[in-house]
Image (tube, rainbow, N blue to C red; front, side, top):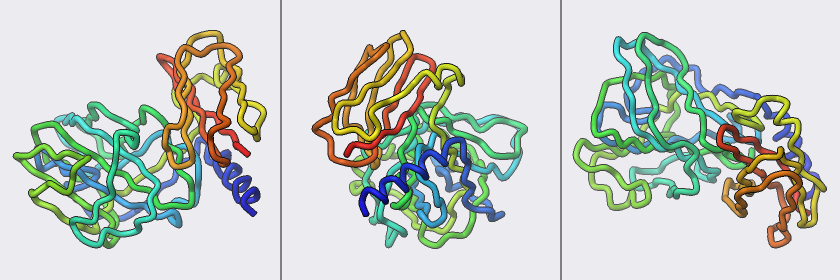
Length: 282
């Protein structure tokens, strides 16, 4: 039964390549999500149910629906966290989901453009392995020391959003229990697009050169890489890093005998591209 479930998961992951899932079609408008633009600092968490997503695989980008066209652009310094979670709602303002640096999928400036009314996308620095069975947490930490009112479209979803914000204190996302500023549990969940894909930034010819075998494997895995240095990072189905190797090129063998049985994602990085391969450890 476990093997059948794993094969089904892998099939879903392969189907998810280049697939975009849209969650939420409401016309409500809020400045609180995906982060609170009205405050100097904010941290938000949003929960999306597995029953709404109905896919598994690598998420390489996320998009949010801007509500208005603005005459000026606004750039914020943000960090985006994704996590597979069992939590389905926030019970109160202290019921946050802990995040760590390992959950970061994007960190840097994000610009809301001027004279534009539509979906705005955040391309991740590394794909996130969504397991298809847990719910999905998307958290955004905003650290820009300024504010600008920007409204995004949301769909009424009870107790699905947790928001912390302040004009004075820059929140520590790894110590939310110590925050004493404004907190709110709300129903303003942002209309969201999840972009699934096996690779980010690779041209088709380069992507086709990559392969991993044997698959399934009992521990020794070989990867056929282009003849240029790459970084290899292996993530389990929870998105946790379990292996890393630098300066790999050509035929490369990984010793993964110490890993538990299950589905794994091998991320291959160069200076300009990221590609993700999947394999099963028996």
